[in-house]
Length: 141
Image (cartoon, rainbow, N blue to C red; front, side):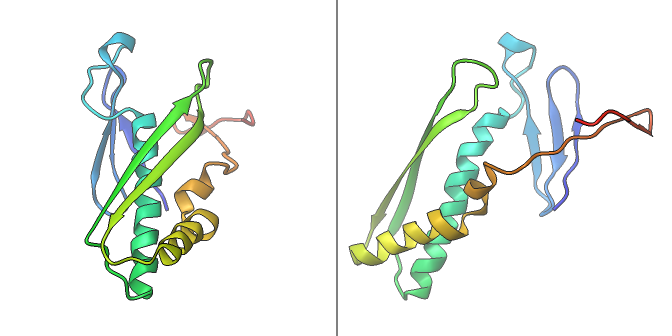
């Protein structure tokens, strides 16, 4: 998967996802932005919730189960010091319908332990490189 985002001035960036959806990122006025887009950290929580939610729906469908409704509440605590990473992420699944508890628990467990690529990517090795005026940088980051 590849994605490019471009600086739009001040603290704003924008790009298009590989599936064709526009995404805007910006900071608050207090730190030099104009609040024209979501904060990067704000996108992390719905990405985790959406990923695991899609897993759970897919698994329940394979079990021939259909929730009448499904809501996911997610919250995260962040460190006080930089890089102010999320130290905990809490997800609560609220499902309604004729759903056996053991099947719902199994679907959640499978998403958590095996399928949710977003949550499993939170410990990914991240490499960085750079170029200036089209010339590849020499320093290893």
